[in-house]
Amino acid sequence: MRPIDILEYVLLSFKSDRRRAFMSSLGIIIGVVSIVAMLSVSEGLYSGVNERFGDMEMDLINVRPGSNMGPGPGERPSFAPEEPAELDDRDVKIIENIVGVKAVYPLKSASALLSFRGDNASVRVMGITPSHHEDLKVVIDRGRFLVDSDYKAAVVSYEIAQNFFRMDISPGNRIRLYLSEEGRYMDFKVAGILKEDEDPNYAPDDCIFITHKALEELLGRDEYKYSSISIRAEDASQVEATADDVDEGLARIHRDEAYTVEPTTTRFESLLEVLNMIKYALAGIGSISLIVGAIGISNVMMLTVKERTHEIGTMKAIGATAWDIRILYLLDAGMLGLVSSLIGIILGALVSGVVGSIARIPQEVTFSSALSGLLFGVLITTIAGIYPANKAAMLDPIEALRAE
Amino acid sequence: MTLVETIDLEKGYRVGDMVVPVLKGIDLCIEEGEFVALMGPSGCGKSSLMNILGCLDRPTGGSVILKGENLCTLSDGELARIRRDQIGFIFQSFNLIGRMSNLRNVELPMILQERPPNARRIRARELLEAVGLGHRLEYSPVNLSGGERQRVAIARALANDPMIILADEPTGNLDEKSTCEIMDIMKKLNDDGRTILMVTHDLEMTRYCSRMIQMRDGRVVQEGI
Image (cartoon, rainbow over all chains, first blue to last red; front, side):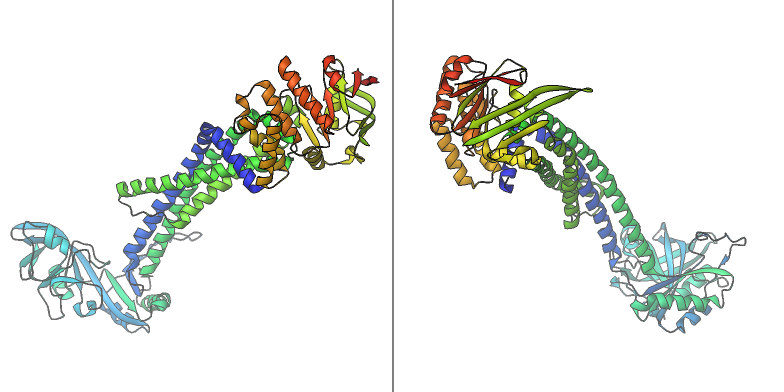
């Protein structure tokens, strides 16, 4: 038989039994919908995260006290857990002298109570070295950023300035910071306000920047240790090697203390990896419903072959070969798969749109998720059609003609 | 010229451990242009013989020679091809496909032959017009009377221009008037040179035929004009 005639026969059988076609395609439609929806929602999650962190600077290295994780697989847990290292100016000096390091930004963060015109709110205070922060991403909305000669000046995040108090904080206002547990306080003059949604990624959105000098005085002079040290490498492509050098350099003075040196990209990459796993796990769940749909198709086709036994017998008697019949019924399944996959992709796009807008997840139906829905749909239904098609092809024409 | 020849043809069916013989050595010869009536009581093996001659079944002994070719040596696919190209079937219960139009039903053997759409449509139309159904081309056979359905079936049997027409009680389900119409068409086909082998119960039908073969209990018992 010519392909066009086979197609016509298959379409005729859809037309003559619309209910059958619809019922058997329902399972496949649902399966493809779930694959496409799950793929696009997780794809959206992935690209949303990617977008958010995409402007992250790839040449940054972070040094923190404490170890990153417990003992690795096969390692014995150490009996004397290492003390977290204390990071101070000595470390900054060492790091500054390592080849490949462009700039070093020690950071100290502390929580404090912010008082403004009689209202209080708890905030995060970040101690910084202003001159070092020139090339970190800080976008000022009004006023100016800190300079090294500043002492009792502060830069306030947009969030705090706009939403924390009855009155908005503006450059020039006076604010007071309390250290809650010790009752110590200091007054500051607001130098600048950060731009909305432009907080640097190393700082929370409820933070106040002041100089190390001021924070040191606020906290008490004796125990001023950095909470972390950010390092900018000279060459972003060499960031891993530079991180290793920093690690080695610090090992000399923190022999039995724990600290972590980590390029910021590492954490981001492992996050993307996890998202990728989630994506395929979700798609896997979707495929299960597709397989259930395929079993449904197989069942309906078995019934069809039984119903059409007489017709198949007639076709064989007038000269159809086993191959003719097999192709007819395989294509029947394949066409069902194709049409229902296409419907499934459209519905899947709608579903993921709805899910995305409810869950506030960015979502997009990518070409690849639509294509995998289509491929899986057609492939699995065709496989589901093999057994019934074979059954039809192998019918004995005499027996089949006798059947009513 | 001899069209079909059977030599000591045997057919047995396995029932449990036993083999029940249905055809017990049939020697038969059908010449080109004959109209042969095959008669006999139920269970005498007429249908089994027809199935073997129609390439739907294989004998368990002896041989069938169709136009010089021994059918017993052919594969299933080759038998299907002979059915498609050389044999026209007319069944008692018509065996038309109700989902298709009459035109499509008649086209079907030509679709299997992969003939070009235009050529086969023209031929199917001509054949249906020849059996008096030119005004029913796009109807479904479901909407036709028994006689009309059998006429569609005859048109279908002629579609591939077969060497021989095998008709299994073609008038068995028809009333008297339709029977006459169908037999007139068959007679006319034979007059045009078609070879026909027809199974029938009705002695009346033999008057259309050129020869009659009587079967009983798996054997040919009488041949006559």
